[in-house]
Image: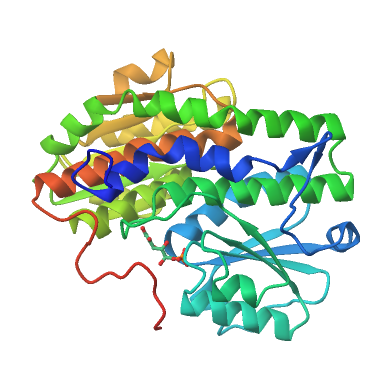
Length: 368
Ligand code: F6R
């Protein structure tokens, strides 16, 4: 049942192309995005004037990725917030606010309470969920299921990629309903998304070197992760995976914040993972990150760089280079997260831990 692997998590990492394809399937019909499990009329989507995304943990990171795409496609303001913070605030919501509640299990207590809090204020709630009939979709106005299949490993992997894809479908449906994108542009974005299962398969074929690197890093005291733009939530997710699986101190930073504090942490041989944007897609950001890496390299850090295939400019700054296929900028998290999942799993295994059942953690957090 583990498909020849010692752990479910390793099998679930390999199932990511399928999880993505299954989540996208059936949502583009006759040239239009359809959210068919949605019980929300087109008119409701047209009236939306603000989006809140609420979630916990890895699901929250998928929401952070989605913000870049939804704002870009729809020109609607998008706020992404931890459910445990949202529910105790007095957020400004009304019936034209769309709240997207993301939860793999559909049972997370804080996310459920945040949904109730939003609905009391008449906001419309769309759940993105991986579990049929769970409490959060039951209490939401509409649901979009991620069809990632059951996830047994406590650490979220394939559901993270599926959540990003589902969020993108919501963004495209909003753009379509509001007319902020022409239908041929929506179609083009969807077809780009449809290429992603193949791109993720390509990454999976190259992760042996990441495994070897993981074994080398098993004795590190800490690992830092840096990213910008959509690479920033990827850095946060890479750090979360490493904390929960390898019990190692790990932190993700927005690369632009380096000089505002974190650079003081850099010391000889400290592994720092850097998620590079595409040199063509985001030339300005790429140049900024190159300068960030040169600064940390000058202070003796061991740089582990995730970069687009063929990006020669980054080579001199990378002690270890992990290449991912060239994909549109907004979709890059779908490829760049995968090596970080493998890295965390491998470091944890090298340290002798059970990656399916990390200590102190439960698959669904139904208590607060
Ligand atoms: C991390 C992880 C957790 C969950 C979080 C939310 O690998 O699994 O951070 O993402 O507990 O869970 P759901 O999505 O079920 O609401």
